[in-house]
Image (cartoon, rainbow, N blue to C red; front, top):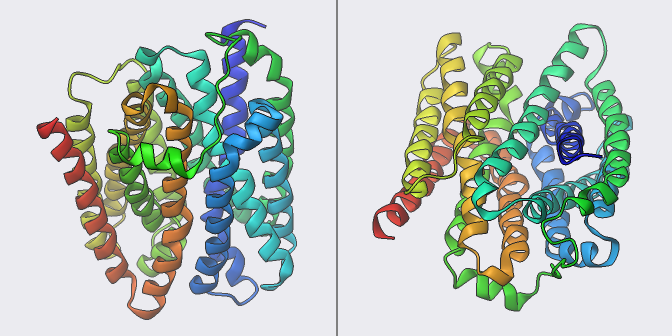
Length: 386
């Protein structure tokens, strides 16, 4: 199997499994079908967050024990079980709790290990491009699965049916990752050397004292913005009388275009200045969203600006995390990057759900805009202070 075919199949498996996260945006609708609300969604995602944080912390130990590609395979099978349990739920029972925990376990392994595998098959000056392509396929999965769910609803099926279909897709992606174990090893830059990747409190301390601490911290803030704008988008859209599928589709197309363009970009001389500029656009997208007042054009403009701001800046930030890491801590830094990212992705919805129920949607958007401004300013400070 050639290098091109191996990487193409790897990216295909990533695309298929990435649809899982996009489908979590449908949890408010799924939970509403059995009488639960946004607070309940946040509570279940908190379980996912806790499981995710624990799993990311030990993901390096899993790969040291099983190997990286078998760990990716395990993630697909775990997610499949989680989605199947969600699809069969009719109340906030024990099966939903187990599904939330399995989702965190599987998704954390998938998200943390994916970039590490790419560092084994690419040179440092190729990382922005390779991470951009990884992000293209992940974003395509993120954004198109809610569109798939919307189309299935239009065809007379239920949100639960979309979870069942995604479970089957994850079984396939898990099998594909397992099949790629030996082909990926054959194209590794130095197949004879695979450094241990276990994350410990000592390595976390070293990471937070290094230049890699900044992208790690920014990952959490950006993930919180992303979760705030996407996890309750079905609620936002219903309140504004606009179709949520249009937001996800516009965002996804924009991100894919931006990340394909980044595939030919090596980072430039001042990558943090570029990150800052993009993230100020992300902040502006939230502000536009605050004033849409049912306007479809402004709704789509906000989605496009979010796609440009967050979507284009994220793969550069991942590459900076790898490049700013100490040479012997690249796998651990990327794992810790994923861990802080997940704190935002799965932890922030708990706060967001509470804010929506108790204070309203506008209050949540104010908080999200502030987080976006803080993250952009952190990047600007690094860009101009070195």
